[in-house]
Image (cartoon, rainbow, N blue to C red):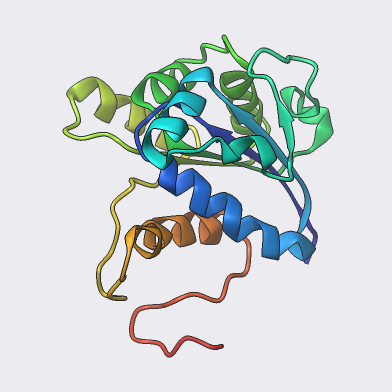
Length: 191
């Protein structure tokens, strides 16, 4: 299986726990990854600090890019990044992506992923939704994007917030095409 070149974008939506769990789960999957490029908004850093009480995003271990760095390789389709996950994805970022507004590295990279017909996964984190949000989701789905709402499952009986977040993050990892040993409905988990 070819290795995946992944762009991971973290926006300022509430739900920094999803980004943290995703980053933690990507590290042991490094044999399946050619590259992981990380870009965070300023609001994402603030939300992380508020919700998780630390600045651990500064020591992730993946190459980080400024959201203003249009010289990042994944700002062009020629770099052949194959998957982009936006986790969590704010409704503002989703709206700009849906409407082709490339006013940051995140929105430019998402535009590139869509135009190259590659995989874009948006882990949306907002409730309730208004008609604008729903129409943006429809637009993105029609353009080839995948909307993955941060709707945790409970059938695996998660014991803490990280396990609960994993029920959503594991879906994103599956959607990205990575192999992950995780709880599956009515299947026995391999050790």
